[in-house]
Image 1: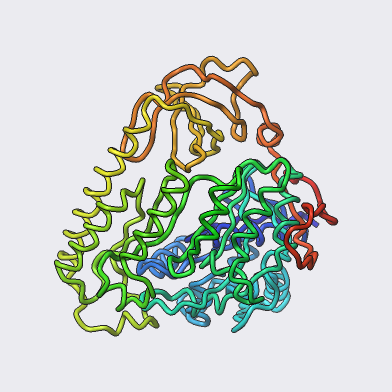
Image 2: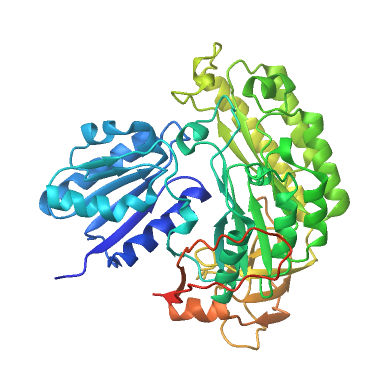
Amino acid sequence: MRTRTYEIRTFGCQMNVHDSERLAGMLEDAGYVRADSDTADVVVFNTCAVRENADNRLYGTLGHMRPAKDQNPNMQIAVGGCLAQKDRDTIVKRAPWVDVVFGTHNLGSLPTLLERARHNHEAEVEILESLDVFPSTLPARRESAYSGWVSVSVGCNNTCTFCIVPALRGKEKDRRPGEILAEVQALVSEGVLEVTLLGQNVNAYGVEFGDRFAFGKLLRSCGEIDGLERVRFTSPHPRDFTDDVIEAMATTPNVCPQLHMPLQSGSDRILKAMRRSYRSERYLNILRKVREEMPTAAITTDIIVGFPGETEADFEATLDVVRQARFSSAFTFQYSKRPGTPAAELPDQLPKEVVQQRYDRLVALQNEISWEENKTLVGRPVELLVAEGEGRKDAATHRLSGRARDGRLVHFTPTGAINGEIRPGDIVHTTVTRAAPHHLVADTDVSDHRRTTAGDHWEAGVRPKTSGVSLGLPSFGSPPVQPVAQQGCAC
């Protein structure tokens, strides 16, 4: 029998990207192989429901898939993720050529649902209301040879009025710290240099087992893992941001001087309407403490423009906080009305033209600040983890790209290296020569180039594949855990 191939198309946040790695791991464990063309036997859409156009994007893409499905009835189309959790049976009604629909709580069901749909010749829809297994207990086929996502929790206990995520991913569920550290160690054993700890509200980690200092302890424990060079995390909530976490960031050498913390609005009145449980002064005080401990930290944020009832004075308050915060960059969004959220029912929904005008003003201000902040780095040395995708060769300038420890993107000239070709996953040191609003440039010889195992793996086309076995190790402070069921790299 011919081996069946698969393709996964991911929409949405880092959590969705990480979920797709789990889906790929399960499909490969079930005997599928990744497609090397556009003719996969199984196409999986891992969807997002946060933005207003998510529905249109999915159904438009599914419409484009119909001719391929008509031409090859044996091809299977599966839809999972947040939009699947929200729309449920609607997907099959609007796109009856879809074979499988599965939700955020049952990723592990995908191979079985595909087989069942093939056998029964009808669509299989399975949407669970609560988590059946923690996703990280599932196998994963990692996308990167040098950087990995590691979930510390799933779900969210907050009730922000604009957000549909808690309804789709459920209440917060925390992993035991030993399991997290074991997964990190497994990735490092495969050559991974950088790990990003993931959670919908990552610094609330520990709420389920009653330790409000658990996240700071977790950061410090990551600092004890030999070979782990960079630790990042996203996204924290200002309400749960403790001085202990700031201290852990500042005193743990491999925790990067970078913080992404959503602001959403600088208006206290709008923050209250959003149910954000902090005010602008509290937010700015956190930033002040972070910079006192880590003067070079790059701080980024999320901001929503045009929340229902936002006045010009409210928007000016947001601009004022942006001026004070001096973000290195910001993800800015126009408010998107999402059915099922309290904000969707609020009066005073703003006209599109008002929201667009405010959005343009915010972007212009933030671009100005980003450029000014980047200019302060010209002439400074920088350590870069050479990036894949972003790190492709620029034919005109012969530049590569990498990420600095503070998360900034740097395009650099790969001249002066004495250890052979510079590859994604390698580490280089160079000097910033020019700044732009969204990146830095280093047009000078590389002062140091370190070839890494991650670079070797990238060059050979191999990626980490972790088993996801749950180790159930409960405590902090123990030596890094040696993984017990590691499967090695997979092409």
